[in-house]
Amino acid sequence: MYSIRFPLKALCIIVFVHWASVVLAHGVMGKIGRGGILIEAMYDTAEPMNYARVRVTPPNSKKAFQVGNTDRNGRFCFLPDSVGKWDIEVTDGMGHRLKMTVPVDERLQIASMDGPRGPTSRIRYFERALTGISIIFGFTGMFLWWRTRRRDFSPN
Image (cartoon, rainbow, N blue to C red):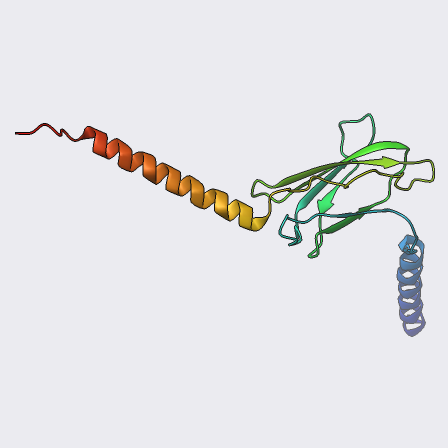
């Protein structure tokens, strides 16, 4: 009788453990959809703002709709859920910040936008370098002029 009870208890424990794992388990599902708005953030040298912090704010709200980071190519994608003007702010943590406003239509896509989709720099690289050199020469000239004015040129 003892030999029959032990396998019966073991069988009950095995069935209970299996039943508990089936009852308590849950699955996951996923799907790939179309749509969304793609943001590409880059510096004026055409280098991507990789891994920069992004904050997306919906229309008529101060609370963030989505917060994340750009990928290594400076891209970030989100799917809006309402119509209106969405604010996007991209910061790299080193002082560079890009702010954009994206109008979303009733199809939850970008409405037609006139002009560029973000601030663009009108000063080219070589013009900035020339400006920097000019500032250095200007300050050097002012310093040398100031030094010569301090000398006493009286004939003794």
